Image (cartoon, rainbow, N blue to C red):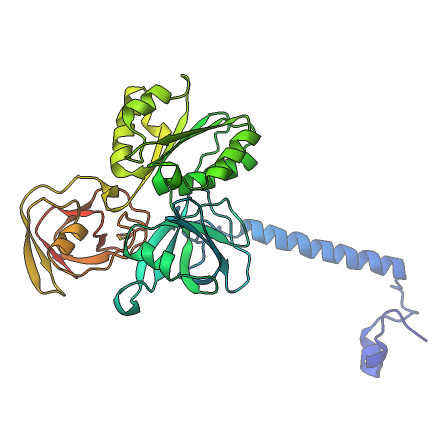
Length: 399
Ligand code: FES
């Protein structure tokens, strides 16, 4: 017969001697035993909790936060297939490329306005060149779209060589030129030429995610044939009463200061997003400042080599390029050490030329440099970004 205190598999004389029997004076009923077990477990839990409470608190190491420019990023390069391409303007100078990840995994969200960095086999002999392009669509877990304007060798590679089915390597979306969350504050987007691309991403996202937010887009191009996404923009303006589209066509293809001053929306706080040639943005910055717009409400991203601005380092210094075996005098004529190196025939890698891609990162072996703007790509200790750096002293660079 089953005995409540006896394991039938260990039913031997020794066990019987250690366990109480049914005839013992301390006879225990099954409900009482259950109560003992419950009480014992409860006591153990209480002791464990007490000990945990008394244990000295050891600080738990907190991993460093990811760089602010990256959202949901993957490390290094990831392969994408070009799944489609198509022109966005009547002049056939601005072509969009749709990219889908080779691994089939959903893409992390990005912040509208961010860009992608590409390693493109567009150099001599198929050598890799690094270039950055704004994403021209709102976040989509299935893929990205970039839109490239034909303007030089690398953009020519996109237009003439890259076809659906090709595989390209990308770094994760990055960049600080992103739309804000202040829904109650109207937005003014100002785009010059291909500067429309990050603003289009912001606009499309805001129309969907910030319903009712008042949005103005001033979009300048040389002529109607150079307007990208024109049918889409006109359709959106017809659909959304709070979206106001202002197309500006002139020979320069940019919004000039006086014209903007005459077109600015009525008084009141607005947040301005500017993207276009650096010269255009410098002029607009002055107009907006004169109109009393707070500096914090003017967000901008230039493209092209002039993005950094003409703030060269002062003074005459000797710059030694160690790998090239050259020592050259810095005369302050160049906007940055990258321009300086290239002007003197010293080969250094480059990509975005605006502190974003990290291609021009170079070790500073001796001396001091100054970065003219806060880079998106943070260089390693003892390194600088040649595209943003000017000398403060004589230098020895690893390049
Ligand atoms: S060229 Fe991209 S960081 Fe300098």
